[in-house]
Length: 457
Image (cartoon, rainbow, N blue to C red; front, side):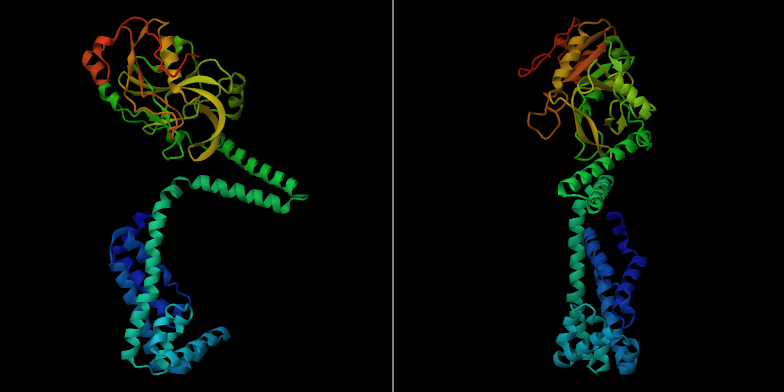
């Protein structure tokens, strides 16, 4: 919205606003011109840019329009009035304005700007009745300042209010559209439904649910949403830059998208897929990298390895995802991102239940994670101690802790599990920059590291 208001100081825009404000006040033409557009726009521009020029331009143009109507009234008089106001409704407005103008004079000229359609004929009528220009001109200027100034104020206030809600509206237009569609469908089902209130309510609820499920089906299996987001992210130039994170990934960029922690770093010439193959984890399909038809999705459900929803790290979806054997409701799973060179980021957690979560542009049916994600990190650490080829360097406090009860979907001590290939030397300087004490890093089997309030599964 702000980018449109930035053009208000251009000569062409100022001229258009001036013409709208001017012709809104000219007798006859003002009936079809909506001058409020110019006043509201100038007020919004004042709020957005602090520029008074559009406001002064539209007020001066409106005053010029009043003076033009006044001069036309003095020149052409009652004959043109009868020609322009041939409809009965317009003649009634004319008679009201004429009586008030005769009684109150300049006071009515000032007040006319607040009386809606009466303001269209008052300047012309004042000229036709012979009001002195020295009285009309200042009275009209004050009336314009009050009447049009109110709409300028409304525009400024509207910009302030819309400026607070516009980012939400812009980010969630699809969500709002779905909500309106579900409400409209439920309302139509209620209106056309037969039977008592409970039967109508059941039909309305089923209609809204059907629309919701249809939106989920279309989002995942019809629209090409995920492929459009498969963009490469920025690569890390050095492993020490891994300490800068980010250590959260989410399904979108708004406050409604609940993040999940990135709590594993792998330092290896291989990939996260190589490590998970050694551990015996099963690969999951992802919507970005795999062509998942509805039939293939159902087949993965039968195998209890449903696809993993996409999370984006620096705007980039995970390169791969894996899970331990589990059920459709609960499973340990991990996503991997190659961050450049030998650095790979992982996000491990446990799916614990089915829930409706905000994902991409819509609320969809997804797994919800167990909030105690450090348990999953400790499980992976324990498994790594049982296989050759990899060693745990330690758990570094790289991410900010998230305490219990925080406004997040999980809680964690902020530790990030650091893993390296057994034969890959890690210089002490690298260990230090990653937040580890080089003297405390061993080469033997790792032991699970649990914080006091946790217990192994």
